[in-house]
Structure formats: C-alpha cells, structure tokens
Amino acid sequence: MRIGLSTPMVVQVPGVASDWESTATVDDLAHIAKVADELDFDYLTCSEHVAIPSADAATRGAVYWDPLATFGFLAAHTRRVRLATSVLVLGYHHPLDIVKRYGTLDRISGGRLILGVGIGSLREEFELLDAPWEGRAARADDAIAAIRASMSTPTPRYRGPFYDYEDVIVEPCAQQDRVPIWVGGRTAASLRRAVRLADGWTPFGLTNDQLADVMVGVELPADFDLVLAAPRAVDPDGDPAGARRALQGLADAGATAITCSVRAGSAEHYGEQLKRLRDMAAEIEEKR
Image 1 (spheres, rainbow, N blue to C red):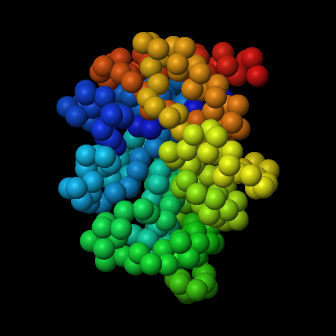
Image 2 (image 1 turned 135 degrees about the vertical axis):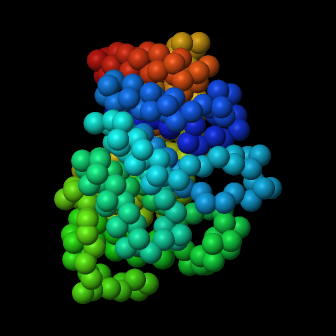
C-alpha cells in the first residue's frame, strides 16, 4: 500500500492542521521529511496558492508555502521519497515556466517529481493574478499536453490552440523520461481529463459513494493512479481503529495510493505517528 503525506506546516487548513504547526520551524519540517523518507512513505505533497482573499482564509486557510522552494529544501534533506505538487494551478503559468522550474526540481532531486496539476477554483485569485478565468478548462487541457510534450527534452516543441512554440532550448529538463502527471479535481470532467491526458487522478472532498458515482462508466487505463485522500486527519496513536478504517475504506475504494494528514502534538510526535501509520498500512496490505 503506497502512503503519501499531506505535508504538515506547508499548508495549514483550519480544522485539519494541528496547533503545533503554526510555531514549528524548518528544522521540524526537515525532521518529518527525513522520517517519512526512512520509513518508505511514497510521497510528500505541497499545494499552490499565491494570495488567499481574506474572506476565504477562515475556510481555506491562509498558509500555503511555495511548492518549488519547499521541495527544493526537502529534496536536500531526503533521498527517496517523491515530491508531489498537489496541485499546481495551470492557469497561473505558461507551460514552459512549469517545464523549466519543475524540470530543474526533478533533476536536483534525482528524478523524484510527481506533477499534480489542476484547473483552479478560486476566481478572485485568478483575477488578482490577471489570469483568464473563463475557458480555463480548455487552457488546462492544452497546458497538460504541452507539458507532456516538453518536460523531458531540452528542445521542446508544441503546437496547440493556446500554446505554440518551437526552436527553443530549455536546460536543464527533467531527469525522468516521463514525469508522472496527476490531475486534481472532484468532477467527472477532471477524471476524464486525467484519463485522457495524465497518469493519475487525485480527487478531493468526495465520499466513497460520491467517488463511485463520478467513476461510473469510466475505464481506468493500466498503471493509472487513483490517489485518494483520507477524509480527515488520521491518529494512529489516539484512534488506531479509526485510522485503520480510513485506510481500509480507501483501499477498498480502489486507491493505488493514499494521501494522509496526520494528527500529532509536536514534530517529534508526528514522526512517531508515521511509524505507527506505516506499520498499520503494512498489516492491512498483508491481509489483502
């Protein structure tokens, strides 16, 4: 069972983040990443928001670390765990901007990038950044195709309805021959986008019943990742039965990878929780 982490500190959503995260240090973050690396967790995540409108902070949270800087730091403190954007908002970037910046990250991390992308859902942020809101889904489709064509070559070329380029050099490029692309979202349209253009789908905010409804009639390709998130922070120490049910339910729903937020009282306790969570996942896997 592949388990990834919704990395603490770097995104602090009210009701999900633990109290200690607001005063934690980068040394705490490095410690947690090293523990996850040593315990063979599959990936760490970091989301992208540039500027949250004050009116939305109470529900979305206000703390969103920049994923590129964060992962550059974490890459230097780990050796194996993968680094998954969850997700980049495609409308905020030209595809070659993503190709250059995250291709460099893939190179310096030794080929550990997972590129999670989405069309975006916060209109006020689009307007603030002067990014087009209308037609963002079609632009996102074209951007994913452009990124796929360009990520792993120093001489990218692409022609599509929104993006068109050739005779350019982008060095360095990604180390991986095919950087995994996961599409975020919670709609049938996002699932279709993922099946058509990407390597996985990472939905959010869906119950298992809602997930099943969205997936009706959709055939997932071979080796396609269905990346499901635990509906609430798991607590292997304080509520082991609940944590086990959460993992088992997502595994039964067809998850190939599970993203967990973890309840803890400190960075040290978080590391202890990871050991319990890893053992729990191994026990579930043995019984499947």
